[in-house]
Length: 211
Image (cartoon, rainbow, N blue to C red):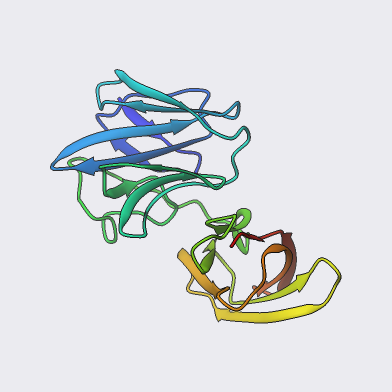
């Protein structure tokens, strides 16, 4: 059997799952786990033979779902909800993972990249952690055809706070860090403009700072 994501990637030997929005493969000491999240807000962990190991409650309709290292801890993140995990590597599950840039080559693995005219994957950019409690946050997105990104941050009153800019690296995850050490607690508006491939798109998100 093979597992197939909506981005068109296969891993032979893994079970087929239904009714999950996103799936990630993680590893520790050559032991693999499958993380799968539903639209209703259920985060399930499976062994590679399809046996369910655990289940967590996650935010419904999560727009972000990833595994990363944060504050020297390995974490699973779903729309700002964070769980620590012993598994430290994601070998599959993100657009752009293939035999050349994945961490480990699986036997009989094949990858197919789906062409897209999107600037960023799923039109999604988010900041994490949110709320911000440790002095900095990162705006994260996966660039497809994005070339340049500008983020203007305002107070809710409309007062301008700061501008962040970045030249995007395509076909990979990009991050822009915002240091909020000198910023007061509160909710802010981030107006994000992304340019690329002759297109311009804008997004708005609300980072919150807690001190």
